[in-house]
Image (cartoon, rainbow, N blue to C red; front, top):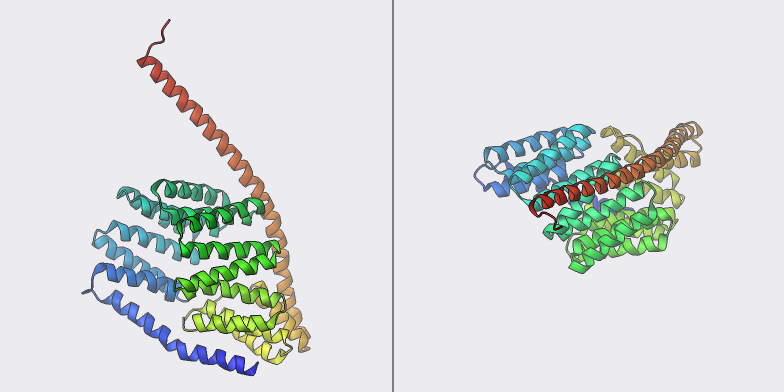
Amino acid sequence: MRLFFVIICTFIFSEISFAQKQRDSLKSVWSNTKLQDSSRFKAISQLIPDYYLFSKTDSALVLGYEMLQLAQNKNNSTFQAKAHSLIGNIYFELEDNNKATESYKKGLELALAIKDSMLYAKELYHLGDAYLDYSDYTNAYKVLKKSALVSKKIGDSVTEGWSLDHLGMVHRALGNFDEAEKYHLEHLKLSTDYGIKYSISGAHGNLGGFYRLKGDIPKSLFHWKEGIRLANEIGDPIYGSKGIYNLISIYIDEEDYDNASKYLIEYISIIGHIDHPDYKSNISLFKCQIDYGLGNYTKANLECNDCLSIYKANNWKLDKSILKSLYEVNKKLNRHHIALNYFEKYQVLLNDEKEDKARTEIQNIIFNNQLATDSIAQVQEKELLNAKFQKELNKKTPRRI
């Protein structure tokens, strides 16, 4: 086990310089006004989400508006729409949901104005995803339904598939598991029919998450591993690392620390070079949980505190997983006062979960009532249009007596 953690540290230190070089390279391309606009836009589109969105969100917003300004100066409506979408994503990270939605809608308007159906469908999907992120399930459902419909009409099977998948996410969030499974499986089938490996991988991953939520661990493991395998086949191991993260988490929950350790090494080999606080905190917490499970409580305490320092540095609220680990480790080390402090905070989150569950049940009732209302309104609108059409037809073609 000691060798295992030596390997982990080697990965982290050997690859951190690569991340800095990659970030500096993207910044250099973006700043070079002699390069083609397309190259600069491509660089900034990667630089913001990969290196600024989570760790330097305010700076990300500045860069997003710089991207928008350049797109406006060049009169490039496509990149203006994409910039608005990226700015919307940043505002969501800043928890300013109104500005986020407003930015996404500006992107939609631009896509319509230039009659770019593919871009319009994608922006619809992004807006639906945004609504889902802050639990506006009714609007998420409506927008994602529209996105799926538009995408199908224009033959964009990728966006259609992800729209269907996120409709499953809406139902999953509301506890409608049968409907959720139906949409997730529909996404997998559509992606498989068209041979879109990236989407097939993602569909397997979301089914992995779904079955874990349902408590079907064998099915969950199968789908996660399929998603990882396909991500590696298409040469995108970072995409597959999302699945590896979940495998580690499952194996820790199942107290299978050998497999958890094995996949943690793989996880670090893939994302250890990325300067991203989420990844760093994930690694520290996993190390803590594995060492705790193996009875290495002193080492686990150090690793949990490493994770805690990342949370504090980024002003993140402590979540259940780290609070539970800090409580358990300090309890084993007979630091009862510290353990009690973390347990009380952990208990608050558990109580909040119960309230969230009750709130979700109410949201589900509202959601279903709204869908029923919309369905009635659509029928009435169709009947009205049919009546109007028949009236106009009668004017032009008098009935024979």
